[in-house]
Length: 344
Image (cartoon, rainbow, N blue to C red; front, top):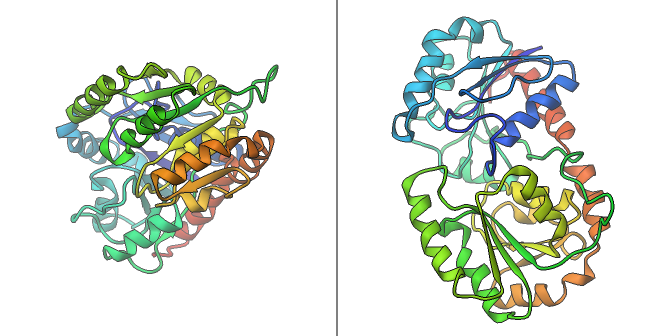
């Protein structure tokens, strides 16, 4: 089978630091291991997938990213036409819509967020979780809409080989944005002054201007707390080190379609404490790999009980449920349905 993967034309594939687009790269690698021929599109600086080909996709400012996807359609249509399936993660849906309007209809569109743009064709849509699928259906997607849980490279995201279970402090790692509820993490740091809290993620170095705006606000608040360490815009290597050393990741975010940070942490044998919201109940085995919290008091209780969670159990569960090989196998089943002219 020959599959084209079309990510957003914003970050390199794989991204150099924080970014859920790493799942596109992991899927490309996982599909290659299953014998799939991968045609990966990416902006300058992207890597060629194993046993596949890399095709250039022009990068424009965020407000003009649609132009990049139009360029792919108009200048690389001959490549797309030769593929059995075209899998798009675009923010505009331009290529996905065009294939259904003017082509064979052999495309799949995975959405990143919980809102379906009005112009998106409600056909062959895919979410990241059962929660995500239900939200999409509420917005007019058909009941046959699919979902495939994400995952990560569990061989890369793994415990420290020399000191696998030596842990210290609590970690928040994400974009600095209101929906991530960074203020909850900082409030917990204030309530536990003798514990170490690490605030990390994207502070606006890459992304839209509002990311930098909120990053600056949260940075100013965090700098007032002596037990909070700020690590902004870290590399992937440093991110893995932070997961390995944390007693737990605290992630109070709301309405997440998936939550890649959680499965990456679990793969590094790091327990997670997250909101009882969105897709998180699908990801966490409560009392085994983490705790779910519905209030600030719940988060406080979870912090006090975090040592009852076994990091080894977190790692075992992640390897079984969240490895990229499982993601690739699940998507391959969907691709075969599309290649057989099944629409959903």
